Every structure is written in C-alpha cells, then in structure tokens.
Amino acid sequence: MKRRPELISVIVATYNWPRALAVVLDSLALQSDRGFEVVVADDGSTPDTGELVAARAADFPVPLRHVWQEDLGFRAAAVRNQAVVASRGDYLLFLDGDCPVRANFVATHRRLARPEWFVAGNRILLGETLTATVLAGGPPVHSFNLLEFLLARRCGEVNRLMPLLCLPGGCLRRLRPRRWQGAMTCNLAVWREDFFQVNGFDEDFVGWGHEDAEFVGRLINAGIYRKEGRFAVPVLHLWHRTQHRGREAGNLRRLHEQLAKQITRAELGVDRYSR
Image (cartoon, rainbow, N blue to C red; front, side):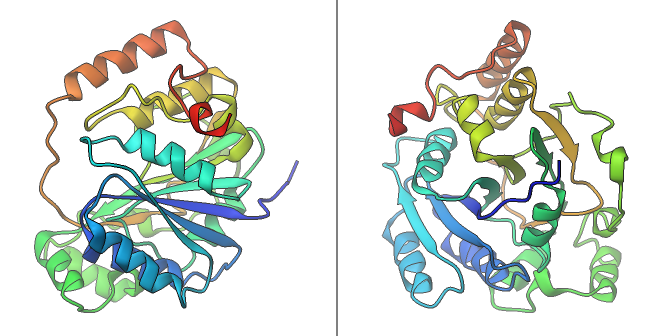
C-alpha cells in the first residue's frame, strides 16, 4: 500500500531559546514541500517565544500555531500531546526547536511514509563555534552545500558527514522493525491514527530522558514498526549545554519496566485532552 499523507503536522518542541527556534522556523519556511503545518509545542517559555511565533505566523508560508503550557519543569511529553491535539494533519513529524532542517526534509518524510510504520531519522551535531555563528545571523547551516559541510567537518564543527548521504534503501529500511533504540523525537514521524492508538506520549515521564524511546516501544508492541530514516532525512542539531538529567535514572527504569510488560497504551496520555 502506497498511501501518502495529505497534511503533515510538524510538531516543534521548544523551551526558552527563541533564537534557535527562529533558525528552525527559517529552515521550515524554505521547504520544497508546502503540504504541512507547524505547531510549536512550548514547554513553559517566557513570552518572547510566543511573540516570535505570532510575528512569524503573519507571513509564514504554511499555517503556524503556538501551544503553551505552564513551566512546571521538563514536561515535553505533555506539551507534545497538547500540540498534537491542536494539529490537523494525518501524519505527525516531531522535531526539536534546536534542530534546523534541509529544504527536502518534509518532502523526504512524505516519501518515506507508509501505513503501520513510523520513521526514525538521525542527526548531525554542530559545534559550539558554528552554532554561535548561525545564531548570530551568519550563513544558514540548513542551506550549506557539500563543500561547506566538508569545511565545517575539517574544522571539527560537525561531528559526521555520513547522514548527508541520500541512499534509496528500499526494503533495507525495514530490516530492524522492532528496534526502539536510537529513535528520538528530534526527528520522528508517525501516523496520527497510530499516535492515538497508543495514547500518545506517557506524561508520567517528567524531567529529561527516554519518553521518546518509551513511546516508540509502545508503537512496536502495538504492531507499528520502525522504518529507518538514516541516509535520507537528517536534522542539524545546534550545540547547547547538556540538559539537567536528575530524573534520567528513574525514567530509564520506567522505560525498561514498560518494555518488559509489553505495554501498548499510556495510562496518562493524549486522551486526557481529546475526550
């Protein structure tokens, strides 16, 4: 079956970094495929983020909306669920607000989409100096050509170049359908119906870490399998200091408990907003 998404909802998670979000929005404004909308999932930022989104929405090439929740700590699962409820697309593409994308990002995800499969892409990490240059209004990294990436790699400002390769893959992209490891919400696509089938993200995951892996694990348990987006659709991850990870150990323990139980639906999930 070669069903294609009609409307893609790009869900961009952010928290108090409007300059990085502006770069991400710049990259989304340049997409070759315009059959999408953008919903900014704001985990309690100060008003300048909402003001940025409102200003950009006036002349953005596709619909752009802002969903905000109160700042009660890191609650990415909750705000992503709320953003999905506010979205209209039949296909959901999760992206982080510090990850600009290349011009074919949405088009490639549309091409990779297949019913009953989710797509996990990968990322290229940018160095501190290159990130500072980009945020200061320098050359947009999402528009770099191969030579510019080679020069950045030579200077140690990108960690690898292999993800830039665009390989057809075919059936090779479905060789590890039950692999949950390495799937991250900075670059993850899933059908809306499948998202609601597993009740979205588990909001019992509070603090940084593993809510995306647990979500993917439930998709797999429900018979929705992984299609590999590597060598097709990378994102470019701006440098930043490491998040506070005081809740990571507890989140990791919960992840493994849920995997062992073969859970398919989150108890505290998206249905609390959509009943």
